Length: 225
Image (cartoon, rainbow, N blue to C red; front, side, top):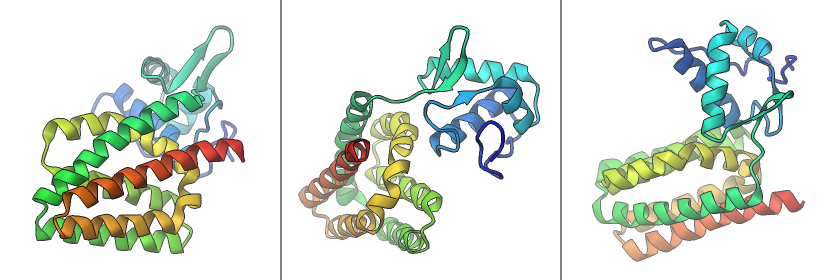
């Protein structure tokens, strides 16, 4: 582990082009989302700057932006810390996610073509392999891609924009329960693919609602265990 608590090799390369402060922001947000930087962890500007190979100024600007967006808490005389979401915050966001994704599943069942369904099946197969290999990071990333593909197949731009606003936080909340959900999550994905293929809008809606509710309950259960 590095001194800031980052696993060796976890620091992402800064993508180019783009303003440096934006690239540092994206790098730190990815580290938070994947929980390489854990909730409650102290964020030291000089150490983060060293890990990312930049000066402290863009790190400071990125932390201020992350604070505005609720990812980081800036405490007087103490510094910056990764925000620790309350159970209520998580519940509210995951409830909204259920509403958005259930509607996306309904629309996908109405509009998906063969190519779209094939893409879902391919993502599902890759996800099952990741679970079998106990590769949690890859499984989380594939889970996000699977749900994003259903949103894409729904064909509703406004719905997709709303979902994009909560996607990063969904990944943040899903990561700690990904191993627990494991194979069952992908079994549920298979059921959704079947409903979409059959153009059964009601069944696709019900399955997606149940699926996202399982994740929400798993997140709350993990805090009690």
